[in-house]
Length: 273
Image (cartoon, rainbow, N blue to C red; front, side, top):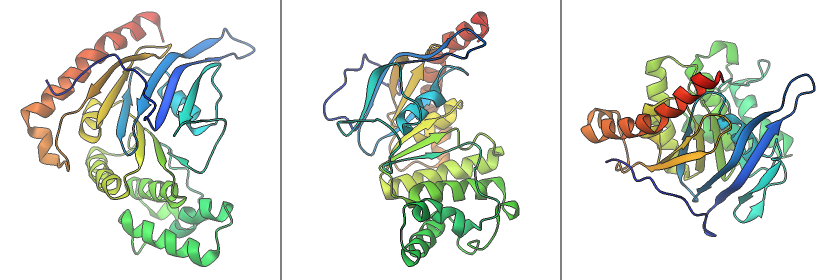
């Protein structure tokens, strides 16, 4: 088997700890909806962890809780031992929607977070230039978003997230809108960037193959309300290349994730979620 599944006990050495996180949305005109129910995970520093689960199970909601935009009803999330009470510069998000400001150039979009922090102009330019080179966009500093392909836009979004030097990178289906070839390329480039920067990554995806290829561990969530069903360890060597996807072990890992997930997809369909 390509993974190890086990009941997970939170440890004091964990970098990110989520313990019994429960969250319900209570719109005035509809019945309350419980998105997360006693969701519990841990992530060690520098680890790449993917979260998969049925649509509507609370994956993106959990990222927003970690980002500090949403406060859970019960439970607690800690970063390096400190409770998360709101947004902080040690966390950054990369969204599926590129979220670039159309009136700003590539360089100006990358510099945005630094500008908001009051970083001096010369330092902003130097840091943005280095990151634009890191994500493979050297020569496009003065281009505008409408002049870029989808993959290029997502590279800008990644550079912008890295610019403020966060400790944690939260990624919410960042490659879902890309064509298959560009998605494969972006996955490989993300791994290279992660290996160079050693950021702690929480990565939400609906793609089993993507989760297996990128991750140290894969968290499988139940159908809504989302809970931790299994934590699967991906025992594949790094660095990883595209050819690795052709090996039998990689296919075994994909099958293991699918077999863990498929009952939850059926439950979601039966419940009408």
